[in-house]
Length: 468
Image (tube, rainbow, N blue to C red; front, side, top):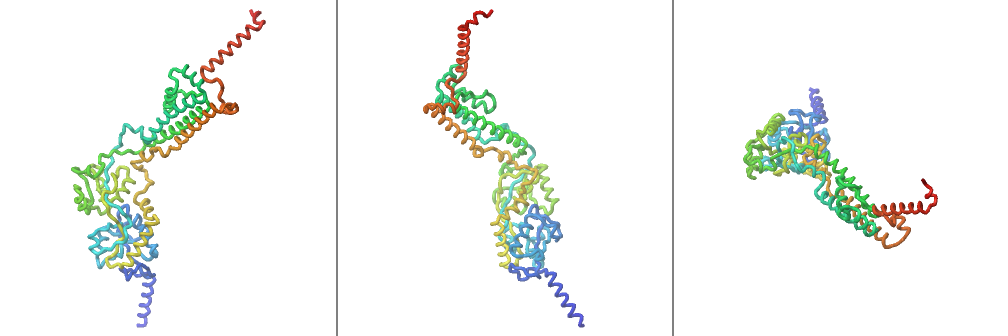
């Protein structure tokens, strides 16, 4: 009989060191070495990925398990203070109200609903604010006859042609101010000279449909140089954006809102039918998939056209449209709800408050946003966002610096022209390289004068008379 006390003492020691799996044994938000809590979850993409009936820590991933682990760490729990168990979604919810269940708490982005609170389930502070979103099947590519205008915002197009007008007018004014006679001679020799010709040349240079602008003074040549540089940069931007937009996936969807589904066949989650009817929406097919195969069958009905739209959890819609190119999200969430950690009905208030505080900490430090981007709406995907073309569009703010440089150049050139005309400083004229006679007609006059001078020299030269 002396062996019995020894055996009992050994069993007590073993149970102390291995942990006691119990249903919240006086939990108050702290953990002792002998407490092990059972945290239930359910496979629910993209929130949870697990294998039903499995409890290996390596087989759990997704938004909810990662969020729980970080919150538990803030509370002070160690990995050996809890175990994750994968159940079906329905079994997990039933267990939270079952006195003989095993779940101390559950992490599966469970929606906070009045009927669940009335049943005794307790919730922490919401860690995910979502709702129901509309998803459609994108069957083809969108055609747009005005797609060639998409690389630039309309303001950029407007200022581009206004700048051409400003360059032509300012170049003409600078020419007149700096050298009136030279400017007048241009009018005499050109077919359509003057400000009209310069404005046309400035505008046509945008598409390389005109000869280079003619200028005779240094200040006006500065304006032309900067204008040519601006065109060079804008052409490069247009070419790059046009190539990106033409190769981007532009899906063609006829459904632009849930109102477009009225009178058509469309589906929704069975448990949301009340709020659907409350908003005046009448889904024709109700779904409640319990596993991955049933979820895929639901999506295939969307692909085959059996239903033309699917209203489902926004997180699932974001994840599906980000990872599967054939589906497209329409608009934002059309309803609102919150998801949170759930606790067995007998959980202490201090435990629930401890996790609520931890989740608030994760929210304030942007950890929840990070988890959302990683697991629910991944950006590193082969599917480009359908609005990629619009996002790549060059806006005026992005290139406004070019117009600032052009305006400053015009102002400086005008100042140089005024100084060159009124200062009458010989060294300044040399710096600006303003000759006393320039232009096409000036060149002709100079050649004529040189020819006459040579003729006079030949006549005055007596040797010339003896040339046979």
